[in-house]
Image (cartoon, rainbow, N blue to C red; front, side, top):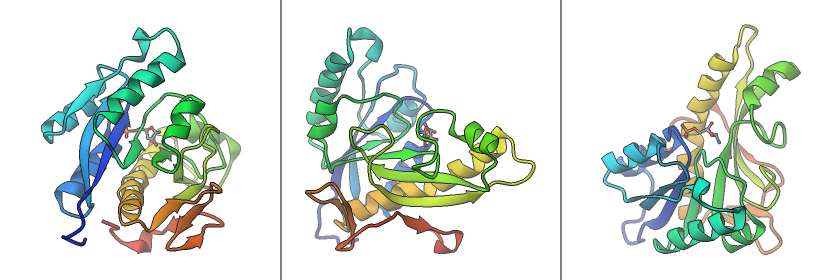
Length: 225
Ligand code: GRF
């Protein structure tokens, strides 16, 4: 990390447990991720991740989706809340809401999501169960830029997890989550270091090269942050 470069301000959106949030908090705390987490915002007041943020001294906010009559009104309130913190990057970390086109456009190229599958396989919910039912041999997790297509934006980084013969949803979920916690701090670091971008045509670019597929994080890659 270059000490002369100010840390990138980010805002993290969550809906629940916040283990990915924790992996980002931990990477920042150990000086391995050059970002300033300006706020953690949840659409659910009871999200456990809010406690994690508070314990780390990070400002929190709740924009409760159930109090809004429609998606557009919720997204507008969320956007206003985010803008208050002036982030250079919005990080969706287990944020379980479909976002409107206007919201997505506003943060085009400045919003990342994590998804527990090897996209484009298994967008949407219940990915681990669907992976097991499909009989696929490899599962995993993906980081992608957010576009209007749900779980459909350019994938920038993936970790693969072999499916084992006796895997259950619980065992597979746990092994994928372990990889998620490696992936997200790394992708955010690349973005903060301006190594990772979305170009004007909507292509992901890494180290100046247009990505034709995601970077694959292997077990041998070691601790990324
Ligand atoms: C993660 O598996 C993430 O990929 C998915 O929702 C889960 C959130 O977990 N979108 P956590 O709240 O980060 O622990």
